[in-house]
Length: 484
Image 1 (cartoon, one colour):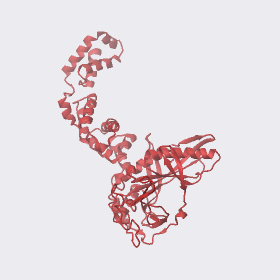
Image 2 (cartoon, helix red, strand yellow):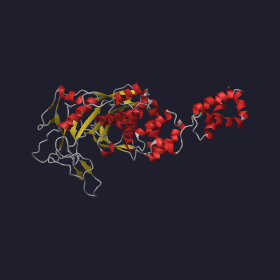
Image 3 (cartoon, one colour):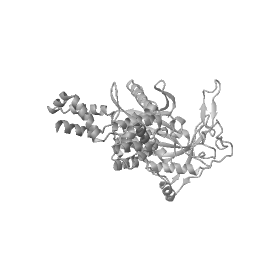
Image 4 (cartoon, one colour):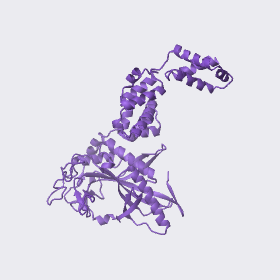
């Protein structure tokens, strides 16, 4: 799929590469024992190392290293058994050392692949260039005081995995699918919580445009976008800006830009530094990070079933379409919920109820799966009541509405409200005879070849039984009675 911008001088293609910073789930920071807990009072999660006090030495956190390797394995990437921490030198008020400890030419994880699940059911492979570990900077707040900027160092030194994609993304939708899939993978692995609203997953988008098939153009980096929707918007807006500049006779300057979602525009922030401007050199306080195959194998054994494998299993075992399986595995909680509903039942019917009915109701109420008023066990019971003909599919929808409102058990709801399906042939026959007797003209129409009128009769019988008659039985008995 290629997203083409039609400019005044012809078509243009977007080229996108994403750099995603994922905060590592760990109790303490990358090089100190300070807490990583979100939401603590400013400057309370700060050790002497994080504050860059003279003479303090960083000590690498083994748990963070394991999390990075685990993520690399989840991305089907090459794990580098030797990697080096480097100092990336630049000045910023909330970077106490005046440098960031990161990795440069020898990252912990090399090339890998992410398979995107597109809305039309197709897939696309996007290459991963690298994953490296680095420490986060603190946070500058410029809106707390009219004269001063405030600094919070709680985030300083927190472990980040920077995951850099190849420039394989061609549309805003692919960028959205990439971020959605990456977030799902790290959440399944338990290596990052993926909460963009808390800043534990942040995205920089490198955007350029070119004539289809021509070499890459000059790229601009849109910095620190904090939601998938905003990343997609920013890419589209920046690409259109670049087309306008080039077609207007201007030239794209490589720079860092900010996205303002309120104004719907990107703005220049600073000229983009090249790698040599950072004056990288190996950190003299940290030895190279070296481990063996046994260490990698040990972590590999801890890997859970990941979204792609789970999707393939749902399609294979439950007969689901690629689209339905993709929707269900997009979040681990949704996949876990579905598995409980589908266990021992018709997998397709379970998927239909979960995706169409449950997700529809939850979206309407703006509630996540974790807070669903309908438990997976109760939704499974509802499907059982349909399968054993206790209730019809239409009555099941009414029962489901009550379950959404009350969180109740479907068996009790059906019992209390007298909603059991009528399968007694005598009772159904009585209802049919009454409808036939009241509409002799319509009976003659059916006998004259107007089969469509049968549907009207089914509707009348269902109405007279309060929707409780078994629709299949009604249909068959009506045909037998009218057409012999």
